[in-house]
Amino acid sequence: MEHINEEQVKRRRNLRLLTNRVAQFIFMLSTLFGVIVLGILIYRVVSQGIGWIDINFLTGKLSTEPERAGILGAILGTFWLMVVVVPITMILGVGTALFLEIYIKKGRLQSFLQTNIANLAGVPSIVYGVLGMTIFVRALDLGNIVLAGGLTMSLLILPIVIVASQEAIRSVPQHLSEASYGIGATKWQTIRHIIIPAALPGILTGAILSFSRAIGETAPLVVIGIPALLIPLPGSIFDKFTVLPMQIYYWTLDASLVEEYANLAAATIIVLLLVLFLLNLAAIIIRHKFKKIY
Amino acid sequence: MSTLTAKRLNIETKLSDDLSKGLRPVEKVKKMIYETNQLHIWYGETHAIKGIDLPVYEKEVVAIIGPSGCGKSTYLKTLNRMVELVPDVRISGKVAYNGKSIFDESYDVEELRLRVGMVFQKPNPFPKSIYENVAYGPRIHGIRNKGVLDEIVEQSLRKAYIWDEVKDRLDTSAYSLSGGQQQRLCIARCLAIEPEVILMDEPTSALDPKSTFKIEELIRELKETYSIIIVTHNMQQAARISDKTAFFLDGELIEYNETNNIFNNPSDSRTEDYILGRFG
Image (cartoon, rainbow over all chains, first blue to last red; front, side, top):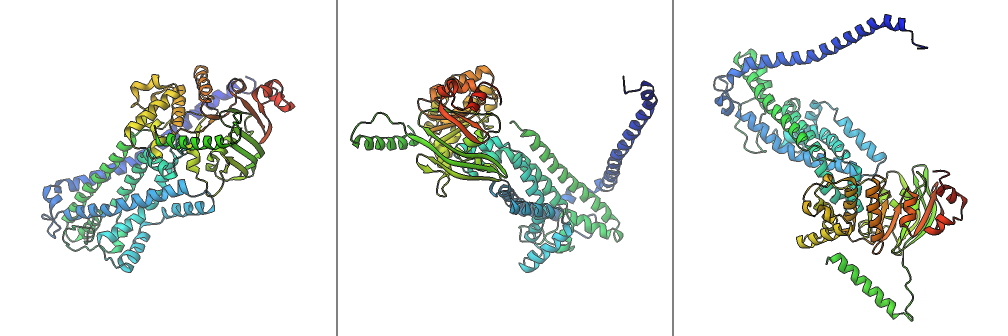
């Protein structure tokens, strides 16, 4: 013990232990903060809305009378929206990711594209709404139908799907693709037989999480101009529509007029949260089911 | 018999026809399969290969030895153009396979890799069944017939001396095999495309002595049919299995000769120093 003075160590010991305790306490408070807020939120929503959820609520059409109002239209709208969003983002997102990871030569162009995609992921959703309105609703003259909304939502979540897919593709060990190239496989054969199967869990997890983002987004659809009026149930992607979060938005706005609208909003939130919870669960199951074996 | 073999037999009969038309039955001249002239390779600013000339003849085992970073793996990966997967790589000079320059625009790299198989340093089977690992190559090249595939798989596994160990569990994952078995599976996978040449990049460096012994036995067996170019860190291994040895140092080819000469009578003092373990 040439440099370490035992006396000094003893004197500082209490202070060190105290600092450690304080740090632990602060970190625990930070964690609790999130949990408590979430708890209150869920308690409020559930206590206000749970009594309003019944089969009529889930299968009923919109109505100005709270007792008769249902959200079937919004559920169908969300469904049709996903019919547009899922294939478009999967094809464009995974395609872009494969191009950037496998085909393009590393260099200026690649890093330019990469930076821009990363930046796109940070653009506020309302800006995408404005873009969607300008291009899909007005310029292409689609009107505020499911297709226009779905295309807008696809733009919004594409950067996330691309980045998540890129990470999944990159995590496939290089020695596997080398083995495939080494036998004379083309890039496409290697992608199809080696890379996609190995990267699929990662790609799906990222995609599902961004779908749940699209299901919960409201701002772009507000800009596109989803009617608050009573509309017929959407039967295809070419119909006018509303979605669950939009319904929450309008009922919350009008809660000052009709008090029960607040309960309807809460009930819709419960349904929306359940949908999102199920999607997250699916993502977790996929992640665990296809645990990496290499 | 697969279409691949059929194709090749066809070519060979043609060749022997040509030979028989010649004036005298020449004593068996070995065909040059790889010709390398003034090959330079850069990784970014690093000059990894500095002007290498190296001929390789058919049905020989050529060992490439040298200290880490001498460019031996880079050279090996150039022979099937795998080196192009490295970002920022620049290549100049000529490498010809069977007389055709492999860097020509029109050269079909997939075709090259069909004729030139590769076995890697770390066993790298696919996360598929044993059967699917071996069938992968033939499938990629268009063989669909289940009977043909079955036969290729069995023959390849037999040639790689692993058939008896796996014949009852072809459908289990390749990852259930030991490291040495995985490497022999990878050799079987490579044999399944019926290559002419097998490139081996330190194939035993990740294996225990017993598995290493088996692989070396296998290499001795394979050289009856294939040309083998093997990079190795292990000089005893080079001495045991190769016909010719090339000594690389710092991106240059220092000496290339019959393995006997290299190990018993090296002409360059650096070769001698390396072989005697004075550096590297």
